[in-house]
Length: 482
Image 1 (tube, helix red, strand yellow):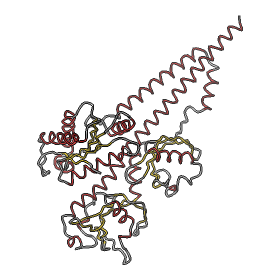
Image 2 (cartoon, one colour):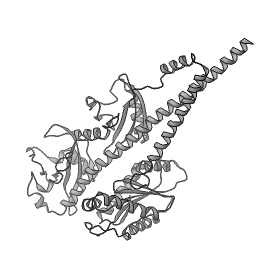
Image 3 (cartoon, rainbow, N blue to C red):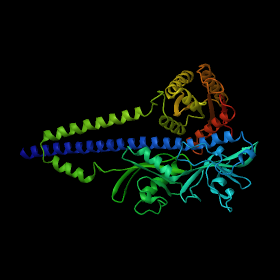
């Protein structure tokens, strides 16, 4: 009888211990999931901010092109150095004065640098890459001839009367990019770094001495190489967990804006919360305490698990909405588009990028509070216009995105025009706009999701169409055509 009692007690304790191990494992997974959710939010925030930062540099060059197209060649050539026409970006210390390398070999700049006699801008990386691409690009990394510092150049071919005059450029030093990334993450226990498509570390905010090294050649980092190659192959966010120099690293890697760069957000996992050693200590302690304490522990772990699960659920929901307008944010938009690309019942997807015309001028004239109110009114107006099943999201700043499923291409332009007309009829005063009211421009593209066309490429097509709409005078829609 006594043996049976001991056997029953042993079975009871074994069962309880198994339940504890199960719950501890679930808690560990929830904690790791919570950490990764935080890191994913960090990465998406950093990637979005970095993309907008690069986009601002491109916009500055495009704006400069619009200005200089009003001048004659002779007016631009009037002063080769310290040219006042190119001295328009004093408020942005992260980017140099604008300069132009001309087709005839001349060089014009808003700065003081005088090129040596053997200097030919046409042989420089920034000139050749922009000339070949025939659009605004970010160059490969190269060494500045004047300062010896590493930099990239935002460049764009420049035309006067449909004739190529040269390439319009401005430099962004890698130190400026590093400072930007450090500023973005200084309040978090994380660090970031950029890797180019060949695996070379461009910028590392935690270990600058690794810059210039290729991750394939770094000892003790084979796992990092595997994660990087997976991100290149899949084109999507990849979670990382590996050991480097006796530290446990967790993080994520994803393709970033600009060139073919990959942005990594990582963190040293100092807690190592539920490793095997700690689990054995828990087991030894549990075997020495009373049954009641074990049951209480199960209750506490289960409660913690539920709280962590609720935190993850809340974190997910809060990060789907834009705080100002209440519509979906870019994070949700990206996840939604990725899901559409995987569905077999989707034949066509139309992506519309909407941009409020002359919105910076509106903010400068009326103030940012009025600007926020305008965004809310436009959002409500468009949200009331589109179908309930259409996904309407804030893309960033004054840009929005609308996604339509299985809508024939011939109807997309009509829908876009209806939205433009609806916003126009709001008749919101805008004295600094040539239309004297708030208007929007729309770029649209209709594609068939496939493995040969990524979500990012489809968005880029819509963005190109938006640029065409703005070039054509704004307050209109342009449809991307290959």
